[in-house]
Image (cartoon, rainbow, N blue to C red; front, side):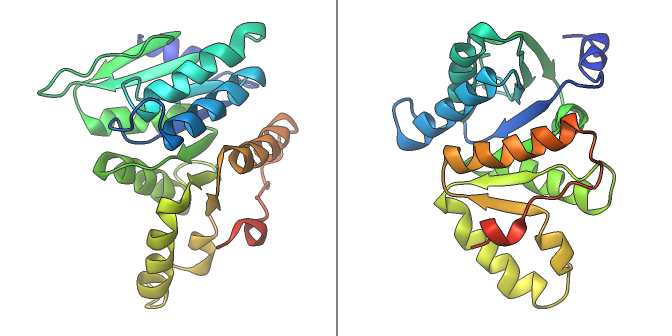
Length: 214
C-alpha cells in the first residue's frame, strides 16, 4: 500500500477501527474467538478494520471481518512491521503496507483510526495502547475512544489509579479517556455509539465513562 492509498482512506465518512493485540494468541482460544466475532461485527456494519496484519489477534480480527463484510464495502488494512524473524501477512486483507520502524507504523495507525480496541497482548500491544492514549491526552489527535477488551486489563487500570493517578502524575480527565469492556459485545456497543457520533460529525462526543468503569 502506497502513501496515496492511505490518504484515500482519510476521506470524510470513512470510519475505521484499529484492533491491537498479541501475535501469540492461538486459533480457537477464547480471546481469538472474541476478536474474530468483533471483526465480523465491524465488517457487517461497513466499518473498516486496521490491524498489524499478522498472526494471533490480528489474524482473528481479519478472519472475522472477511466474513462480516460480504455484503458491505468495508476494507481490512494491514500495517506490518519488518522483524528479524519473518512475520507473514494474514489472509483476507484488502490493503497492506510494511514498515521498517515501529514509529512510522504507529503514526499510520493513528492517522487511520477513529477508534482503538486493545485486546490482550504483551509489550507491543502496550506500546500501541499508551501511544494512542497519550496522543489523545495531548490533543495531537481527536478524542477517539480507546477501549480495553477483556479482564486482563483490570489490574493495569487499578494500578494506574492507585499509583500515578493518586500521585497526580496525570489527571482524572486523562483516566476517563480509556474505557474497559468485558467482551466483544460490550466493545461493539461502544463502537456503535462512536460511529453514530462520527456520522453526525459530533466533535464533542464522549462515551459515558461511568457506565464502563471498573
